[in-house]
Length: 438
Image 1 (spheres, rainbow, N blue to C red):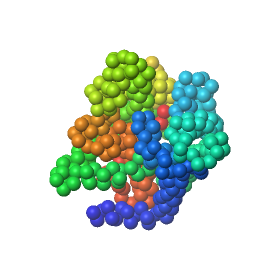
Image 2 (image 1 turned 60 degrees about the vertical axis):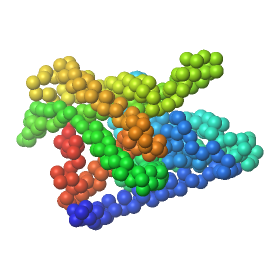
Image 3 (image 1 turned 45 degrees about the vertical axis):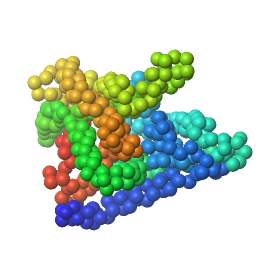
């Protein structure tokens, strides 16, 4: 406890770090306030409330702003969608590949295209949001005027949220966009925890304690999955420039066990709503369609979780393949005079990296699938659905990833000022300062 108090004191001793933390908190408060400001012309008492399915997932990411019909009802999600589209384009389209290799100027162009695409996506999603989630009886003004004004306000709200995220990244601590998503998710945790404790009552106090212990070990498992890396040693040849010798040191290429992050779960979860949706058209005339619809509407059914887990494994390999290019890594190493000890540069290096990537992605994909279906097991064990979502899935992975990234930045400030880091080792496990840059 003394060490923890000393670390907190050290954090606020560093003026720049203190200002960044306070700025981050200020931006987060503004973002959360915007989640409760209802669109003009809407009667909040007549809103449908809790969302389910893919809408419920979005509402979780947005901290309830989606179901509140707030001015930040779409939050940062259109920007995330645009970023995913641009990321896929940089893999599939040569024009964007060339732009990505242009360095800082290329990244600025991609960011500008992402912002413009965000506005178009937001206009489309705003239309669907207004038509699909706000009932007619909740609209208190002329429908045409409400539709037009809400379209502009929701788009402006997303642009404002995007600006807040960029300000957090620039003037605060951590990745701003990810931070806003995490805050939306974690804002639901206190309410879910209190509701679970109230439901269990005194008679179920022991069971509630067991649930908390299980949640602790699940979080530790996700931390291990997020931090786990396979380091490939890279030796750089010595180069003599003038009277100085450069290179000759050994560095490492860190290949993450879960290189795909949360994207496989997001892709798989999006597809899992299709069977029930399609079966709904024939459920009244076909017993098979009714069975499929009811089965895939129940996230605790073994059929749902089997298909869900299989899709996650497949998407993990797919997303890892399009984001990590062993051939490009091998070419960059060869161009910079680096080589893997015992492996010839070029094709053999590429095959070696690809082989290791396949070996670590397989167990990583299975572990990711287990994390994704953990809420279903928690629900079967008697945990309420609201609290069970924190036992795994996208929510937990995002929270753990963002918190670890933020802690790493805080630790960097402490170590630069010669203070003791957050860990006894002086750095977060799984992160290395001696990393080869491809």
